[in-house]
Amino acid sequence: MLHDIDYILVSEKEIELIVSRIAADIDRDYKDSDKKLLLLCILKGSVVFMGDLMKKIRRPVEIDFMKVSSYGSGTSTSGRVSIMLDLYRNDLSDVDIIIVEDIIDSGKTLSYLCEYLKLKGANSVRTCTMLDKPSRRQVDFSADYVGREIPDAFVVGYGLDYDEKYRTLPFVGVLKPEIYTH
Ligand code: IMP
Ligand code: MG
Image (tube, rainbow, N blue to C red; front, side, top):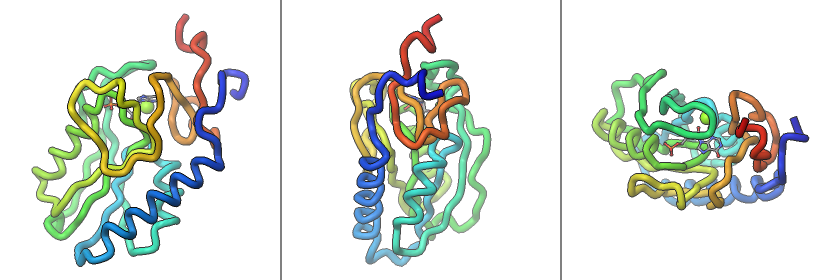
């Protein structure tokens, strides 16, 4: 597994600092809110980031999960988002949602989900992403909390996969191009 990695882009130490900073920002921003705060993890890629982030937030939070598919295969996404696991609750007008995502590429997944959750009646919807590739955007979208901007390279680890592999690596690494170009 390690020999498929070209180089480490975000180390374990840097990830820890990023997660602490975002958790502190969230605690600060929702200090005076009397609504419930829901961390909404987008499966599967965000599960590692979500696990770390929720432990560092001091205020009470609830957690839930959605699974979406952008009908992509390999290293590209089609941008057509379909919901594989939905969020079911009837008190969304009392809930501030923070969508927790692993990475923003075209921006289509998160811009779709934001609209979807607002239409469902959430009190507010914000977005949090570990990684951001702004140079890849196809729709005008920016997240409220961003761990780190990265260049246009295909990355794996810390939850991110290529063909369901590499999710368990504790760092974010750039995959050797020969792994996906054959
Ligand atoms: P978007 O809708 O194009 O922003 O796609 C975001 C999704 O594409 C992420 O949740 C990932 O599942 C996937 N993705 C985008 N870039 C990468 C990458 O470099 N490595 C692994 N998955 C990626
Ligand atoms: Mg993926």
